[in-house]
Image (cartoon, rainbow, N blue to C red; front, side):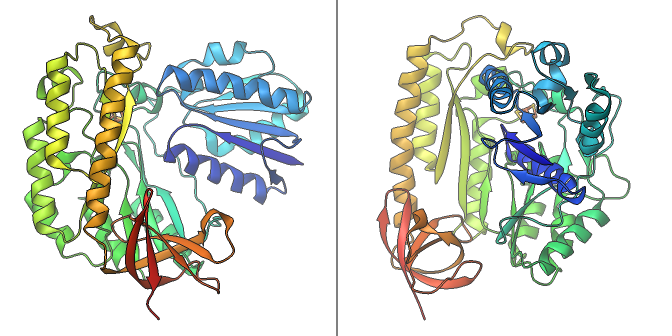
Length: 434
Ligand code: SF4
């Protein structure tokens, strides 16, 4: 039997899909590409924007076209918030939410035997347990994403995630450490800890577990040489935390601090819990204490009520703070959120213009950041061939600069010293120091 996966949205979804794939493999199924004919298609949906909904629906009908007799299982955030809409889509056989993906193989077998549509979407607000979806064998052998936290209690005014994923829940620390030990035994050198709101790791656990002390434990695991953490909110970095990170030897100096807006009034309407000044203070402290730190961010333009003056504040803020990479999103109203009902929604052309201005600024800032490392020697963890070229390999520095070098032999999965010589598009070229 063959199963194919289509995964939309974030890294947490990617982790869940990989874990579900492993469950199928362990039950004797073969995992194939989603454009191949399969006996079952699992569509792991996203609902962050209305686009996610549309894309999820397109993927359902696309899979149905590849094999009209296949079992179609729809799981994830969109099916969690709209189970009726999803189950009404023609050809959908199984609808699960965000909480019971671990039993996917049983549900598919049940459908094959009984041929009755299954809809099982649990209430995320009453079921607060972290669903353990272990991964023992990853395809990529260089770095592994590990989901250690799910859910969010923040309720930013534009975001539906707390409704789709429920409140904060954390993976048991012993299980986290055991999974990472296994990954180290399998040859992984880098671990990326991810979650929906990873700064909340441990809030729901007994004892005094938090993100910092789990990272301190991971540091002790032999074989793991780099630890990264996924997107995190600026308020996480108080003085004590920064001091601890400063003394860590494996934590990479790259932090993705979601800003969303550089204007405090806009941030307030977004229900973000920090001001632009507080964000800047955090960035300053990180730069002062952590050598070569790279700080990247997300920014939303065209949030309801964002006047020209507010946008200019954001622009000037970002021009001054010079982050190493920005991901710019045009605000898109998400039905069911507070922001979708706010007055003064912004015209699409204005969003386009603001987005283009920030993308331009991003190129300048990114270039400035990369140029600081020219002629420096840095460690690069090589991952794979660059653009499938025979003698070019790509990898990342600890502060997440992509580096491409020439090599006649396969250097993937190795950490090697490189002299950085030239900026090329969005990466640096370098020479191996042998
Ligand atoms: S912090 Fe805000 S944007 Fe992030 S998941 Fe929670 S509610 Fe959504």
